[in-house]
Image (cartoon, rainbow, N blue to C red; front, side, top):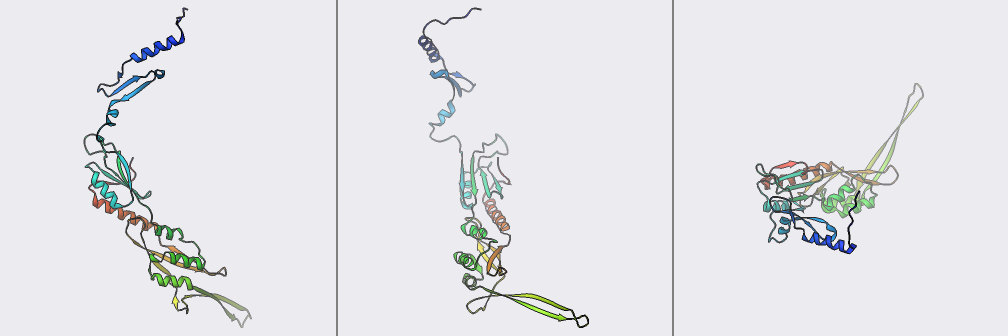
Length: 281
């Protein structure tokens, strides 16, 4: 076997390689003259050059709209959608994630498909009041803690009025009386003893305020949404020897679903685009 021997110093060899690379012309990769392969001297690496992309960097404006934008209320969503929407635009709604997404450059009914790269997302956020009430739903308070909670969020109370509920929370008193009933059977001489508990709860400085079984709250589930009435059932317990109070909200998850549906209805009435329930690709 004959080996080819490369004569000359290593410096001469590298110089020859560099000279060959420098003489290499850009190689066109497509018929439209958009993509070229260019060999650079440093290590003889081959790079792909997209002339269209390079031109885009120097245009006065992009060739098409792209971007993903997030808003937090229906009014802002409608404003952006109206400004940039087209005949191909569509809306996707997902109640689980509480998101409504407008795909402004979606696939049209006919012709070339859309890019789907220009979007506006409505991300609904719970209000602080909603979080405060649902966060303590079913939790036990001592009397001071319950009174402080009602006082801090009194503006959300609608029935009874906030002043009455605040007074109730501060002056709540409950007493438990055990009543025994004794009966004798003359024929057998047996004695039967029965008992029951009588619990009375009152409020007010004179004990003249009746404790309601429930109270009403006016809450906005989401920022920018409508206000909804939510019923809270009031419960108390003195079995441990000390008073504890709690409230139980009636199906708050249904209020959330209703509020989401109402927001979606507002958007449906404000855009001329199909609405799909689900998550877009």
